Length: 239
Image (tube, rainbow, N blue to C red):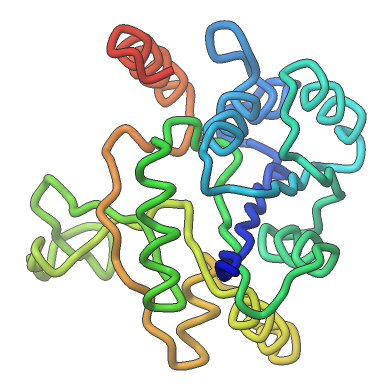
């Protein structure tokens, strides 16, 4: 009898306020051409054969709207729409605690406003996680990187080859991620992402090469860039 593969879960935090974009509509629900940004994002995982189950985290007042999007776009892998917490880390933990995860299962976390993640890169991160327990998508900066301690003058030029711009999805063995979140909660520690929490356990995440298209939509300029990326993807048959 063949050995069953680990189940792959995806937690999609989409509970942010989107203050930098402004307006009355939260950024994850803004339209990108023909559908909300969050719908574009979830469809990338819905169509990836390596993903089994998706949990979405949104503000309480957006639960009904999110459930409507799940139904309208036939997102069958979305098994849970749950309420976000005060911070992103709280939101992810809210979902993580509600999922039935075996120790060998894989949990991915992906920003709700990163709609341009290719299926092949999702699969690459999953494979790297199976081998290394933790894996993170990232790209190297294209520009010269300089540091300024005071914000007025540069004091050091950094080695660009040693620097990475971290993206999502990030993938972790289920038992490892749960342990990392429990420790962070006990220590009252908040990190910038899940990889930081896992690093506190002494585990290094495997770097998986990402894509410069995999932008996080945060500002109005990102919306405009997203429209261009979407059109290019359609032309290339990536949608």
